[in-house]
Each structure stands twice: as C-alpha cells, then as structure tokens.
Length: 366
View 1: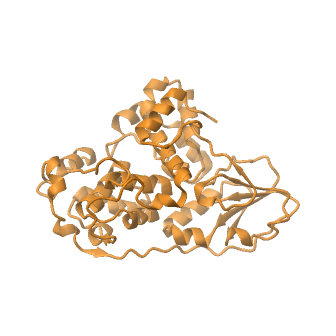
View 2: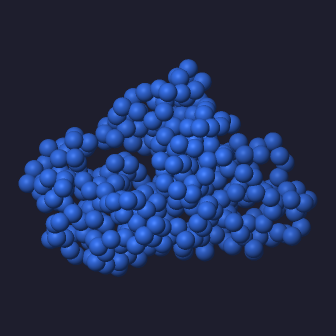
View 3: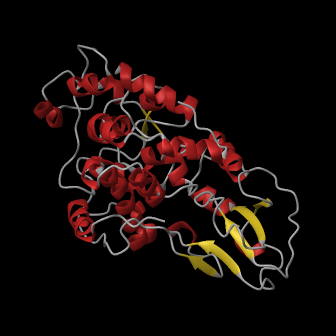
C-alpha cells in the first residue's frame, strides 16, 4: 500500500471508502480498511470530514456504525490526551502488571520473532511506514505480555516508524494492550494470528490455547533486549521571509490541512521544533512524508526552530494555529479542532464515551 501526498489523490481515497465492507472485514489483513489514518493523524483531513463524505453516499448511519465507532476511538484517545497532557506518557489507570524490564526485545526490532506474519509486517512497517491495526495489537501483546517489557519504549519505536504516528492513539493503544489502561491484558495466540493474517503457521511458542498464554514464561525468542536509541534528523530550512503586517499561520506535523483559513492573506509556516522531535522522535520516512504533505499548502515556508525564535513574533497583527495537546505553548489564537462528538467527555472508559456519543446522535460534520 502506498500513501500519495497530493491533495486530490487523498480526496479520491476519501471517496473510495466502502463503509459496509469495512465493518465486515477491517480486522483481516486484506480487509477493506480505509488507509486514511496517515492523513487524519497529520490533520490533512478530519474524521468528521470522512463521515460527511460517507453520509453523502447515502448510507444510513446504522450501516456505517462500525466506521464511526473506530473513528470515535481515535477521538476518545485525543480527548484523553487533552485531559491528561504529558501524564499520558505514564501508566494511565494502574501500573502495567508483570513488567520485567523497560527495554526493547531485539527480535522485534530485527523482525526475527519466528512468528512469520508478525516478522513480515514489521519489515513492511520499515518499508512503508504503515502497520495494520490488528498487527499493531499483536506486536504490542508480544512485547508487553509475552516478553513482559514495559510499554513506553516499544511504543516509541512504533511511533517512530508510523506515517500515521499519533501520540494519543499510539500511547493509549499500547497501554490498552498492556493492561495499564484497561481491565485486562490483550493476548493473541497463533490460531488468532493465522485467521486474521491469512497464514497457516504451526508449532510456534504461540501455538497454545488462548487461556494458557498468561501463564507462559518469556519465550527464548523474546528474551534478548536492548536499549532503544531513536533520533530525528530535521531538514535545514532557508531563512523565512515574513511580512510582519500580515497574520501568521502556524502549521505543524499534526496540522497540514490545505483548506485551513485558505482565503486569509497571511504568512504560512510549517514549524518543526527540535524540542518536539527530541521528545517524540520520528524516522526520515516520516519527516519526508510531512514535508510532501505540506506542499499542498500554498506559499508555505519551512521553519526549523523553536516557536519563540520566529522573527517578528510580537509584531504580527495576529497569530493562528489549531488547538492541539502537543502545542499548547503556541502563542495567539487557537482554532478548535473538528470533533465528531463535541460534547462527549473522555472521563471514563471508551464504552462510557461511546454511549455519550450515541446519545448525541449523528456525528458533527464540517
């Protein structure tokens, strides 16, 4: 699967969604998934925009409920991040059970676990920057619940490689699997992996009944660990040429919407702050993806540096950005994000959040 960066191609992909088949097959590796997550994560399109287009196709809401629910999971995680801030990078509800170490299993990094489907899709992650959601769950379960590693460092590894890397979705999903943000851990056996990845591997260390998995010792294939070292090489930007008499619009790796305030005559800069990428490193493939998506925005300039060092920062008549938990330190006016369910509160479990979404009825659309 490739991920085009030209805006018309992205909109074509939006219109190609088959929500009925998505609901029936999304858990299978060859299912009718949308492949929209990189564009939603990077703010090129919104979840509410996805639903608006699907509803325009004439589908009743009850027939697309699974698609809406999966997008609601993303919104729920964003709300959790919004509520918790940096504390989301700690165990959210309770300490992860049975942790033996805070390192990273070497065989996961090397794609040599011996579970053929998993190894194949880890390599595919390196090649494409994408991993199917079900495989992400398998990977997290293998790392946290079989190798008994704490979730934080492994989650940073996955985030580093994902084109759709989203701190909220990635962190909360790992914690959900590891049992620090859920009532119990998530386990998968070989039978389950074979079913959803369309493989037929036998006689692996996962080839046992599901209920046996929690009692197994760490498999030999997952015992070797390493310290995870990740870093980002940011591009060198030219000096930005800014008109201090015009408003300043700030874009970032989570807001690359070419339609945002499009009619406003303004300075437009893509800000890549070294401090952000030191805290949340990403691969060169991810940086290149971000830069190519930014090409859809007219007259945008690249600024690599801290926000406080932008020239004329105190002179612009106004400064605008989109509200986001990663960038609360931005000055000026913050436009609200486009929520499907603006009134829903993520103060409890997802099931509680989803019930409040259902009470609101039809998702908010743009």
